[in-house]
Length: 477
Image 1 (cartoon, rainbow, N blue to C red):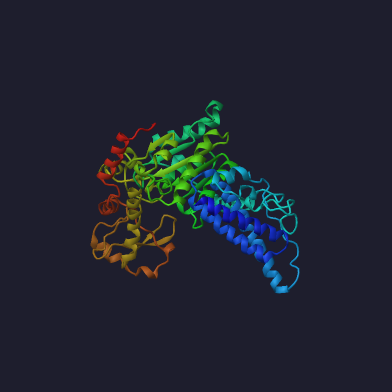
Image 2 (image 1 turned 30 degrees about the vertical axis):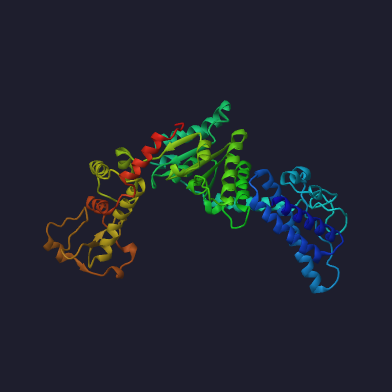
């Protein structure tokens, strides 16, 4: 089947180039489009990466020629007459025709040959001169890199390793992967791929961002949405461009969040396009081990058991990022309330750590966020305020909890509710400006209330899955 398609494509190709050289641009355009259709059919039936790369380069040339001739024909129809010179669109490095044709089994394998280097014709006229032009292929590669380079800016953060609470084992593993090659030349080919796996919300993404800032490395955070394309053959080209871009900007960290979405276990009915993307990933990860440039691939997943076994093998270091322990939970609560005024002591934080067993770092962040919102709720619902001297020395209004008109101000000198009621000022929240209010500090009751409402994002069954996968999967730790 592929041999017959190749014969038809080769015939259309040669006819298109001949007409192009004779400046029959409109007819040539029709044959180029037919050749492009046949190339697309050949791509669908091919699994060889080498042949697919050859087809991709030819497809780039044909589509670039179609683009140029479409403009030429359109301009010629508008003005009626000579369209002017036609730009060359050939590559700087021609493809070996014999090996390509033989691999496809076509009888016209020599049809790719000719003195028109890039397009394989037999003339020297028109717009197919062998001189000039850097080629549509190089232009398209640069365009892909430019699109991906925008991810550098999107990935910028100010977080440092010291900002990441806990995760000591993961920190140490990534330090060894980056700092050791920088300091010790013999370890230049150390770990190039590190997999972070564990339940959701444990800090895998934050850890990757912190490492990039710590070692002043470029940080490329990508997902499947950044790489997958609706156009046939474009996705694997973006994968290749991603790794080339990282090497151009070394030292660089490629962080692939939810890597299972692009490197999942292969299925029998899996589309060929997805299979080629996975193959390209494996090729590029292998080439990193041979490169002298410092590029680290950090993959993160919540479902490591769904990863393709060949992809899993490429990750020389696999680090479990689990739920925070007792000390980490205490530090997470302290960090979450660090920027807020609160009345909690060290014993309160210890008690919160004991009561929050099973919560992830993300769960604790939600608790802290909800607790710090409680003073604003008090102010929003208040119908009485008390005039006090604010922390900045200005006269301010302090909200009182209705209907009992209870005071939460820690420095209040009131002794009973009667006196407080006498000094309370009836006032609505929307009549005051934010700078005229003094909000109450966060108290233990606020945090405990928020803690009682949060639901665990990670169940005991989820943890058991990870433990079972660790026991049944051979990996280097």
